[in-house]
Length: 219
Image 1 (cartoon, rainbow, N blue to C red):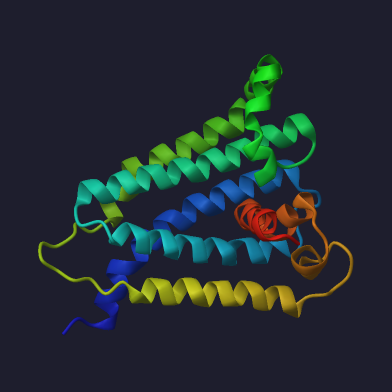
Image 2: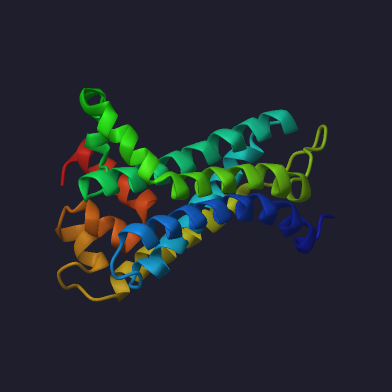
């Protein structure tokens, strides 16, 4: 019978693999754009990042071959790096963060693409750091941490979903346990609609999901 230690040894590395990149991107974005750097976001952002990492590790485990899992990881890391890089460049140019609605109107950027290109060049160091982190994760962490899928095996993936749900519950408990004043995490989640405050309180990933949910279902 598979021991708990052996099961965790197979499930923890993929989740940690994604969490490292998510946390690196969020902290880099926060260091460049959020003032002050501290605050509730330093606690809530990693909690949401843990939930997202566990969910990505679960989705990766659904693919039967190592090649398919690696391609999924490449796509997932590209998405993480792209969103963090987009927010860094967008904030540097516009002084605010890119919302889901703005992302849907990205075709308008073509009208002033020269200015955007100049802004990308100004942000070349953080963007290069994100790309380097993605390359290093796939080049060094993947071969060391990822276990090859066993032929005919039926891995127990449910602990990853349970872990994602647990971290998400801690994320919301952290919001409810804090204050309810203006610019608080509670205010950003339930009372006001500000992408800047949401990023500061929750991180870019959670803020864009929240913004997308409000765009679809209203606020």
